Length: 304
Length: 304
Image (tube, rainbow over all chains, first blue to last red; front, side, top):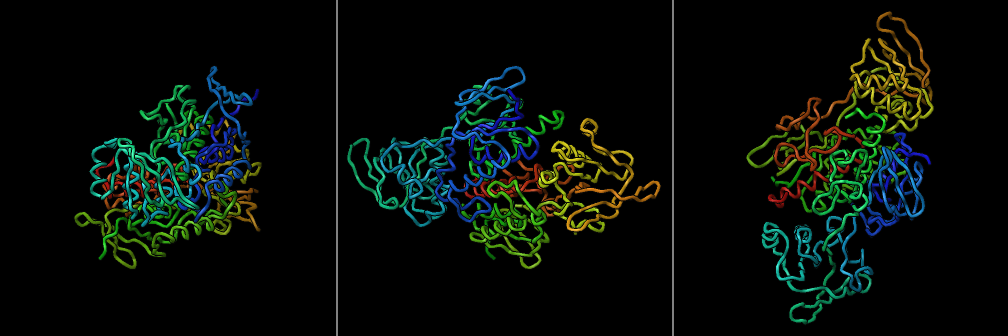
């Protein structure tokens, strides 16, 4: 079995960028793409430099096609396990086994969902998981941020600063967000609805209202809104990396240095998996840098 | 005079990305664009994710147009000086004075040139200043890397690894590149031509040969080549930042943390000015991150 220079795990912006840069620098590499990048869920992207506006799925297709000019992409293939045998990484996928001298993890993260009617149906039509991505469409609109943690508070502050009419909705009677953020919410005039859950997201073409239930009294009500930002958490897909001994932070995101190196030699990570800003542009940049670092480490191990 | 939230100095990929993200997050900002981004010099770019192939000037135009949807771009305007008066930065340009609460430097870098006939004429037609950008076009081709420092050696190793037939040419009788890189050059079989300078780059549509002169003997000769990579140094455009007290490394590149913050509060830097990988994708990512950091620092000074 051939030993590749690097196997890139993940077919999102980080993985495709890593693939383009890896093969263009002379590395023998493949991408294993499970076909579940979160970029596909972004209905409309206006902040990726170079495109005034493009659907996430279309941008991802462009990147996939571009990468495939250089690198073999194993599509709809899941990696089950990665282990180390001597100096070689062994990658067992749902279809095949690979051997490689290095591994680039670009496995992304997943949004936690509410699991209620209307949530999937209205994604991109009023339902969003990212204020930085979609907030701009909700200036002067009425929106609800669902969640009570730091991320939800940050999303709410971002949206109110943009000029949206923002309420936060939390199922408990107290927010988990840190005190400073709670002060900021107060200063910015964000209305907080406690002990309430969304039972259904209603609309026609786009979101029109939320069906709510007070968890204490059991009373139900309807609230007119233009958008709902679901911010109840995100889970980095870091199991494979952790199993290889890669360090993660206390929320599970893989820790890297500026060059996308992890604590395990010849193992790199890029994109949402590493936390941070979690934008397509940053994922691509990290992917490119991870490939450059792999190139340097493999070709010239004495380089900085 | 209105006090802006941020002034972005520089109209290249980093500046435009910063502008898009700054205004979309609610900051009042402008871009001051001298119109001299190095991205314009890249004849053909294949490694910016999203575009299989695009001229640097066209990609830059797309980014400028996209940014201009959100932010005012002062074109062909040079910044002469930036100073601080109390809590406010005062930006004096060739046309106007501005006041801002923060500054994002995206002033880029400039390649040093040989200053010989044919150098400007054949840029993108065999003359290149960046192996990572253009090396892929020279697989199995004969190329010369001009220079004797670490960068030149790195470029030569990159090109030979890609499969090009590479010579290095240096005007002195010894390379400045560090010993380890010289060992790598030897291992990779890179031919080094000492005490020789290029006097002219010759060709028709593309580069065909170099007119050489031995600086010791004065003898002249002609060498057939497909490409010439000029790697005699790069100068970061960091004067304005340094005048504000921003720390630079020993080669003049601005030092930043991962969030693109410099040592001076509310002063950020992004793109080639900060050294590193110096790719359009990394510049854009750094621009976006710098805007996010400015947003956080201005809006919520107690956030991490």
